Length: 297
Ligand SMILES: Nc1ncnc2c1ncn2[C@@H]1O[C@H](COP(=O)(O)OP(=O)(O)OP(=O)(O)O)[C@@H](O)[C@H]1O
Image 1 (cartoon, rainbow, N blue to C red):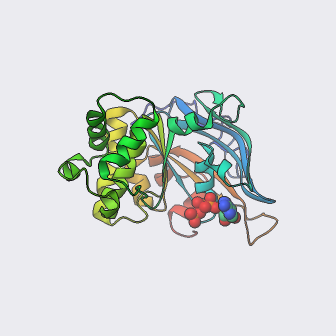
Image 2: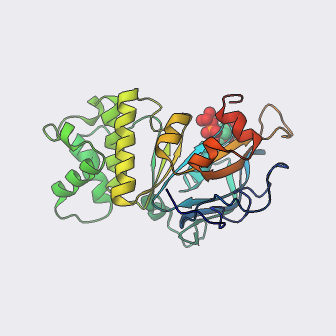
């Protein structure tokens, strides 16, 4: 367990990571909020899709070397927010991010930031595994070569596959087509490919969406290994509350704003973030409680 202190995990709002805390929330820091050093922080982030406000007022600190879960009902903007962390949102012309997102204290929208380097440092795993139509070996080797001239390529491919807990399953068929792999190993190959460029953080967007319970358990074990052995910082969007409880250290709960101007397209907002155990045992915000008890979403 982390040490606890009145210093909050909040990026700026002392009350639990949201610039607009609900009426029921205290404006004082939670005394049970852990002290974690942050890798990524957001300050007053709001994301628009055209004229629709997708998510608003997100003040959040993503702790280094921990797993942060983003939970909340469908459509509250979890995936969009996740994609903003390495500017994948830039690829959707109608999406616009306001506010500040910092990586190691540096604004990721600073004009001097190289977006390709940002995405190397902060990798992404998508809901459906998408290996390239190359061999298993080449899927990982391709990523390693992106970093420039390579020595010891085979060794580096093996290291990435081992870190993704896939090596033992594929070491005898490295030249086989990656797209022939079943979903579980296929997703761990995508994890190995993401690890091959040596990121500092990984964003995981419902990475187990297409996996059965056994394959989910294997991926979770790989993620836990990455955290404990490599100190990887991870942010996972998940609808699986048991998964959030199992693997995350911090949980950030988003909700849909009842007061949205267009009730057919409500705006999401971050209502509460705290140590996962706290969120699931003593949530402060009634919307968190409603979500984790299955009354909404
Ligand atoms: N490319 C896009 N095209 C259209 N609308 C978008 C796009 N990206 C985001 N949005 C808007 O953002 C809202 C939130 O979507 P997002 O996928 O981020 O939510 P979510 O919380 O991850 O939902 P789910 O849990 O169902 O995946 C959508 O309902 C939609 O209004």
